[in-house]
Image 1 (cartoon, helix red, strand yellow):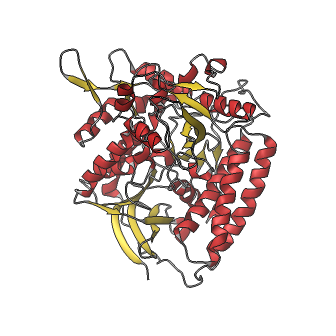
Image 2: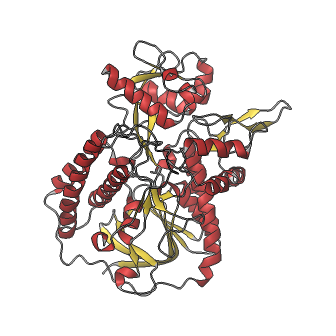
Image 3: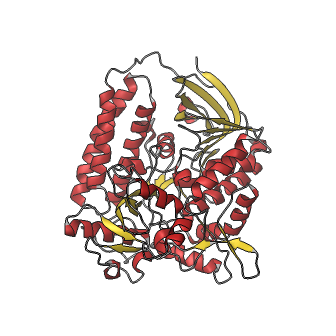
Length: 538
């Protein structure tokens, strides 16, 4: 018999989006927050750059909006962009009230104000940051607040398996009722009933062999929503961060875009600069342009990496602005005050996701999606640097405001069936999981990476179809483990990326194909929307 727990709101994910929502709504609801590993092991914790917000007198909301629309390559929703950008200052002030400490500098009058840096795609300095470890400061402060709140229960090492909906139980009307969740410490499945469920599980960049993301970024919320019947959009737009540290022992370590914002130069192995050949903004061009330029030069020269150099700045400046990067590189005998940093692109951010409206609501009543899991219309075909944490904060607030209006009228879920393990056994073939995991990540990197072709995408699709059948058979026969759950979600994320990429017959933003190298400007740009067949995803 499954252990059953009842809450008003179940939040799946413990990053900036999930914790912000919990803190904003917990005064009127009992909230459960799930983390599938340690509570702070999420993409937020590893975010270096910062949060974009219009705070400088020389900046303006209109400039931030224009920069975001430009980076999004014609696919941003202008209303959503304005909604998000206009709340930037309020969100920073809310974080300050939560105890988040940002980097400050002295004002001319002897006081202090927030230090603002600049990143690719931004026309002004508008990135609020905590040195080069903004995500850590954010996550640590919000987590401390959540732990101290009487109405928030935090569940560490709890991996959501699937959403429970009325349709799946042949009930009406359709709505979300809760979720089955694997307690990884006890290896037991629990039943969480909730009046509303929020997906805040992050992105799916772990579908690629090389990524800046933590191991948790396996597209869990995306896959659960897809299986439950939600539409997804724009999954072909996977952002590759241009600069991850290239070193055999430096797994997934990102070199923040803020380093280029403060004057870092990209170099070929012989020390020559090259970005001027690709974009007049050079190192401060949007990420898709910089990533493609680096990828092009690596392939043209047949080298393993290129270089990012900030050593022309003073050692004091480098150590004070980029302490985390300086210390980490020093661990690998790279002194960034004296030598360039070897870098390569890596999968970084999922611009597409579960379709939501301006209040973070999905296609299923009472089911919300926020943060990287969602496709809100903010990013379009390419996310601009440091808009992601802003989106997390704004849509956490939007969801909280909507839940405040809706929650008093939401009924409690009916009795739900316990998790059934009567027809499965313990696996004696774990090698199948590890092999399939590796195969997905390798063919996605080789065939669905920074530069694509029709032939590569067709090869990738054949492999996703074959592996999806193998994984479904395995899932049906054996007890669930965390690795199996992630693999099951990862193959759905891979298939959605491939099918979306095959649908878009042009190059736009983050999607670049040699078969259609130019954007199709003969008609207005449209989102790539995929709708699931419930029979094949149940």
